[in-house]
Image (cartoon, rainbow, N blue to C red; front, side, top):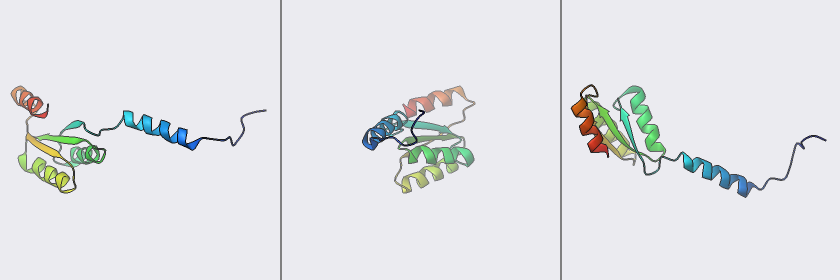
Length: 101
């Protein structure tokens, strides 16, 4: 007989299941660390994390770029923390981790 093309769906159940699945991937209340968050792809990644509810920590060696990105995010209602960091320096990575956690 085959599978019918249309079958009764309980949309409330489908929507609840979709919501539960999406909550598994929610960034609400989480902190995202974005290296290179002051420009280019890193900046866009930071914006998307904020759009999904995350607080972002922006790490880069240049203060002006990550501060500008943080200002832009906060002007839009998000939360961002710029942390000047050269990821090639182990002591700076330790400081970054301590600052973010």
